[in-house]
Image (cartoon, rainbow, N blue to C red):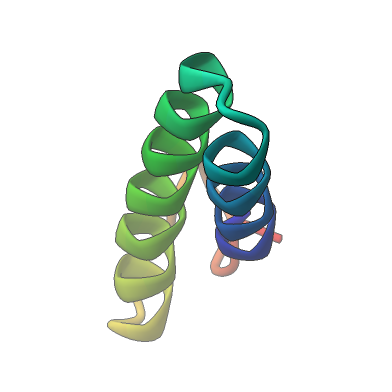
Length: 51
């Protein structure tokens, strides 16, 4: 999810499409939060890892 967010941010910036930029930022933030919770050993949705 983090990589997809970065790709969408770059694509949105290069192509000048603000919707892709916004979706990329949202995916990046959510991915980083899930990554941090998974690394801390917290279960997310009943699973130890979200991926």
